[in-house]
Image (tube, rainbow, N blue to C red):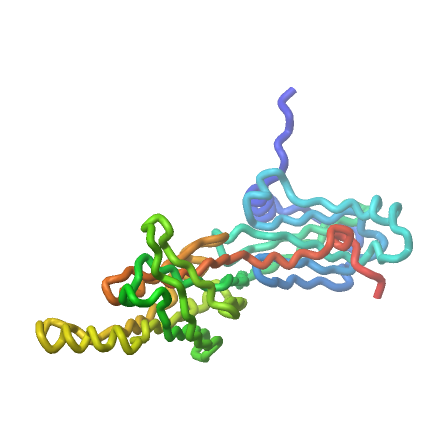
Length: 298
């Protein structure tokens, strides 16, 4: 005998539209019904009558290929310990972010076999948490003269989000950049207090990052610059890098999970980078497992 296949979401819709079932008797009413969403999670809340026995939920995604999510209210009532109301249901479902509009179909069946149907169309607004760990200045050389072991910098990082200044900090570090062996490079300096986090929606414009890095002159180096400028006429005194990025990399459309992004800050014939170690993760606000079906007593 051929094994019967579970009903799919599509076949159920076709059956409803092409072969409506004639109902007999009195259909039990659903006392309350609502569908809400937060990030990628949809919550179906309902209060049914004692005569209702089964709830079938078609979520409108590939999970329907295995049939609807079925809640046997008779079993729920049997295992209820009194701390929750078996007629008050709160059922959640987390969607993959491949379609932002979802159609939900709910069938509530009573003890006579009669069905009540509820539908909802939900637009998802996925929320993400962006975390930037302490930013590092990575220096691949010695921008100072050989008389100095350390290099002094002015560094500013500004973050703009939703047309506001979200974050703004400055540093003036002195970093040892002179090493005898090239294998000891790069010199790495961590900008203390440079970490930040924010929550953004999938439809948000990416955060914008502006960085300013200037390697400051010392008296010895300034003298040699003057000599070079005076006698060769080839010296370019510009040593300021002020680069504005459109923030494009920092968005879930570009990546999720962990990623290291380097912004070049080339100065004084020395390669430098501001290294942003960042992570973007989807916020999935599911209830604890024990509250997934039975709602607390009102």
